[in-house]
Amino acid sequence: MRRQKQSFVARLLALAPLCLYVLSPTASTASNIEGQVVVSNARDNGNAIVYIDKIAGKRFTPPSAPIPLDQVNLTFTPHVLPVIVGATVAFPNSDEIRHNVFSPGPPRFDLGTYPQKTTKYYLFDKPGVWTLLCNVHAEMSAYVVVVETPYFARTEKDGRFVLKDVPPGKYTLKVWHEKAKPATVVVDVAESPTLNVPVIELKR
Ligand SMILES: [Cu+2]
Image (cartoon, rainbow, N blue to C red):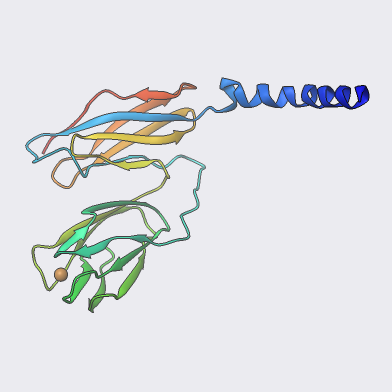
């Protein structure tokens, strides 16, 4: 009995360094970058894309599953979709009518005109911004913003954004909005849980 107790204590002691490692603040060094984008003369501050620009010497693996950009009630949903280079976007049609999906590019592509419950796919293999249109409904438009790191976010209507789990380093933060000139901010992520960026104002 006594022998068993000792060995239990011994096992606990053996685990202690591991617990200290897990609890230590230096064990997890990634930070969240938080901030707010204000778009002058826009209806609201939503649908701006905030992202960390290409990091020299770093390549990231795109997700294997396609990312959906749906067509619902004559509207591309979401209106702006950020993805990493190499991602495939799925374009389902959830309406009872036929839609078309094309982009003037470059490169130009046209997925054709197709009915409900049909999904077309497109692989975005270059960084940049693609405008998406439907040649059946002139009022339909969307944007796919293709970036080179997994650190990106779309702002809420109030302009707020969070870039999650960014490792320490100096980065170029870029901001894109369909109705404004793009902005660039340099950020220095240190080993703290949150980096608050001053308000980023986008002008037309
Ligand atoms: Cu349409």
